[in-house]
Structures are given as C-alpha cells and as structure tokens.
Image (cartoon, rainbow, N blue to C red):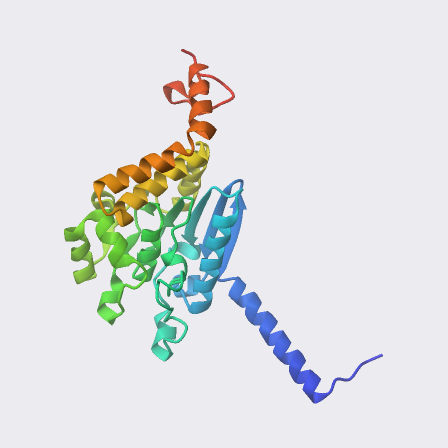
Length: 293
C-alpha cells in the first residue's frame, strides 16, 4: 500500500534528506583511517587543493580530539588527498562571508579557523607534506611535531598577497622553529619555500621522493610507536614547556625533573632491566630478541 504524505510531512522529509546528504558530504572532507596504532587523518577536498572551510575545520578538530583521547592510538599523521597537503583557508567562502571562520578568543576556545591549530595533543603528530602546504595549510604543518616533505612540495605564507593574517599559530610557532630572522623573511615576503631550503632552515625534518610522504611518514610513525610511550611523551611535553611556557631556566629544569620522575618506576626501571639482559643494545629495538653482546 502506498502511503501519501502531507505537504508538511513531505517538507520535513525533504529537509531530513537534505540534512542527511549534507552530513554525508561533510564527512567526506576529512577521512580518518587507523593502521595499527597509527591514525591517518586526511583532508579530502582535492578539487580545492584541500583548502579548509568551516565544516572541514570542525571535522579536523574533532578527529584530533578523538586521536588524543584514544589510548590505543600512539601517533597521528596529517596529510592531504589528491596531491596537495593544504592550500589554507577556502578564500572562496571567505569572500562571501567570514562567519564561521571567526572563532572565539583562544582562551575560551581550542578550535581555530583551520580547526585543530590551537591544540597541543599529548601524543606526536607528523605532517606528510605533498604539493602545497601554504598559508593556513602551512600553519597546520607547523602544528605537527615533525614534517616529512616531498622534494617537489612547497611551503609559504601565500595569504600575504590577499591580506589574510596568520591566526592559527603561525606567528607563534614559526619563530620558535626556525628563528625570528628567517621567520620574518617568510612572513614579510610571502615567498615560496622549496623542500631543500625548508630542510636547511629546520622547517622540514625529512625530505623524501615525490609521492612517498605518506608512506615514509607511516614508517616514521611506526618507529616512534615502538618506544616506551610514557617516557617519550613526558620528554616531548617538557620540550614544549621549555620552549613556550617556562618563565625561566630553573622553571624548565624543575618541570623536566618533576615529570620525568613520574615514569621512572613504570618505564625506566623495566627498561634498565631489559638493557642488562642485552635488549636494545647496538641499535636493536626488538625487545623479544636481545642483541648479541
């Protein structure tokens, strides 16, 4: 039997369908995949060179929050689908309305215009940089602990020419990573930076063949995941604290010692016992097979 709907219920059904398909479309702009204990977070707007609109920003933010909360996920990799990392904000949307891009005060909100840019996760993130990582896309790369850059990839503050400011941590992180003088060179000129120069100035950590950034990043992430995680992440957090938060040398040393002592019993003592048995010597990380002395 065919059931006829009223005009009102028909409109509701149409709105429900529209909402459903909008959600399906939105979900496709960020793809999350798990490979063992590694989380791959991919921006999937290749037709826009993975430029970020408000919906994508929210999905990226949510993906990184979930990664941070998942105890079984040890390292995340941020990458772009279709050959480019990220071209920054979707200026096509900005041109018509900035609503949705203007997030609240950083003290009140941990989501930025690009999404996760205000987060400091408790675990490492690697940027697999291919194609263009420019403007806000470069800011997303700076958010990551390590940047694996393809030899043909380009970074740069291309938003300079359009009057779009760096409000996703770019002016905060860049000088810390490469020094004020080099940072100002990039900030003031908006010039492109190739992989070789990026490596030389410390903007990139690895340069790999074109088309291999994601695979090489996964390999690096798997190597990082082999280490005792509590100790590694405590040291990582201490490095961030001394760089961004510490008021003095003494404060940084105190923070390092206080937090390092928390993992002594759980990881350092068992680690020392493994060393005595020959595990980990001569560069071996196979804990099930002690190295030959």
